[in-house]
Image 1 (cartoon, rainbow over the protein chains, first blue to last red):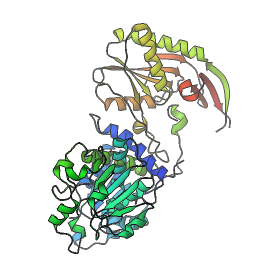
Image 2: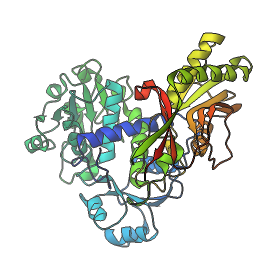
Image 3: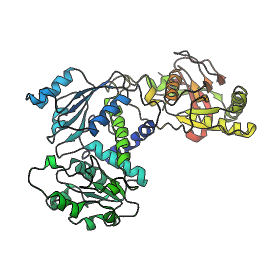
Image 4: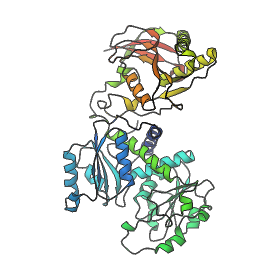
Length: 323
Length: 182
């Protein structure tokens, strides 16, 4: 049987079976998003701390909504919070949150490895909502779910990841997920953002620096946002990036006819992607958002749920119902 | 946990006859089955609900919609189980508003599963009526829940288990009373 997760820190150390289990468990929660009454009592009485040391809109709203639809309460710490401005250390901040007895904590932090640092020091489950340039595991899981839904399976596709791979935690988490399912990964972008060393992230990765070559034959194209906030050296001028790497309808024609286009958001229209592609029939952008809720509900349900592992298990034969 | 079979409660043939009677009772009690829909509780309520629908199609010539309900997210013991049980999908593709719903399950015991099932159904809308159909009612209720259609009512002790085996899931067809060996 599946080894139970106690935290979700990244996708690198997840097994293929664990990933498949999480994707399968998201399915009932996808259906749930269509219910007229979107409120469960499953995690009633539980509290999830949402600690975002780096600003975010969509991921924070998605985790908060996922917790709330499961019936849990949330306590939020935002990047603009005064304690962070006053210079409190990460561990003091999370210890303060822990003293309010949450049942789990969702962390986003600008430093790679911050969630793991916290997980080693707290007793409660930690979910990584993005750490530095390291990982963004829930994004990769929702991307995998979107590919599996749209294309029927995950295995064997040609997936091209386009943009600033070097600074992208989304790309890294996606590479760790997809490579476990035999996906052929092409990393494509300017040479300074897609160095050859990235080929070592997983076996069989191809690095190319020409968008036409990168798109040819692709079944899925993941467009990354150009992250100006994570780049400290002067990079490519925007108009150069647009002319060389923007995903336009004409360039998308080089990919497979039914190729799926994904973007983790927020989209900068007219920079990394043309609006006609972002809003076109091949775009899965809005499904990604809905699937994000389902993935996060499934993870919160499994990580935050349950009493201590040695608690008695009275349910099974009492109801004669479930097996 | 070792168990020993004490006796057979229903044979395959008896299960078939019982379901046929239950199908007739459901139709009689719902005024021609116009707004009727069946909801099978995972797992063994699912094949039972499908068989009832096929019986009703046979004698009343009415196509009764059938849905599948997973009650995991509505269980009241989740805070006491060690890790959360796997969630299965709920598939109810018809509107439940103003429906005459019949929940179908194999065994009625404490009533907690049915409480959970009703909660799940109310999240989907407001049915006009909910009734309950079970193959076996074994007593020992912990909630004020009663079935409207009962295949067989039996007396059991708390240590006994009613095992329903259906060919769609178990590859055999019978109902047994088994006991825990301590």
